[in-house]
Length: 291
Image 1 (cartoon, rainbow, N blue to C red):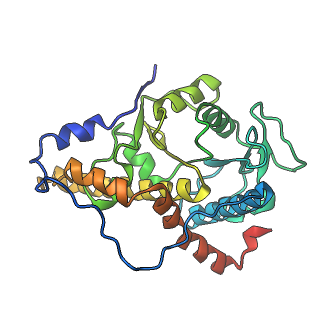
Image 2 (cartoon, rainbow, N blue to C red):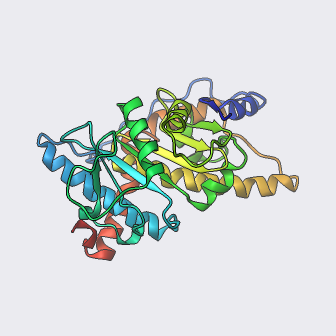
């Protein structure tokens, strides 16, 4: 029977053995006269919001393909519909990420009933994971689960990543581990196990012996988290190789990790980390995914 954890106990245990931070009180970030960056758009028209989110979603699949995260029929992302939040959009089954357009996305309800005419179906495992998650976590609008190479490799340890480099702080107090492996997700109970493992507030999950999943309020946030977590797993594996040969690890103290998460690795900045990727794929494809 698979078990779940919701805290970064392994990391915190290691941090507790490190010397206390040199800073007794970390400074508040300095104010500057730099122009403010426009970050997450807001909408009064829910249909316009739907159009925008779906364009970000189709682009995300193109980006995931470019980064090497496509893996046969595995992998899925869902978007809670802004117009009718009881429904969600999901990618079509067995269509390569590099070929997905806005018009290919499939709208389903919590029972798996497809809501608009389409020639596609969707992954059963993907539907179960995302339908349960959206019901249990109403604050989550987007969820991404792909079989990316480094996330899968690190998941075999059943451990969270550690606070070893600056970008690890994306996941300070925001990463859960689903311990054990309950088999391919084909029953609602296993979907509930994953949602319970994620917990009431975290947005990121390592699924032991399976891979990684990230969530957000927007496509940009969830996709930004996914790319960051995949790279964090890659970094962790590289560090573990060096550590196995006797090179000691130097951990980021807890206060600095918390400070970085609070002021830098925010919801808005995670969303913004995805936007250069969006602009790049938009230029490379001449916006073909918008069809």
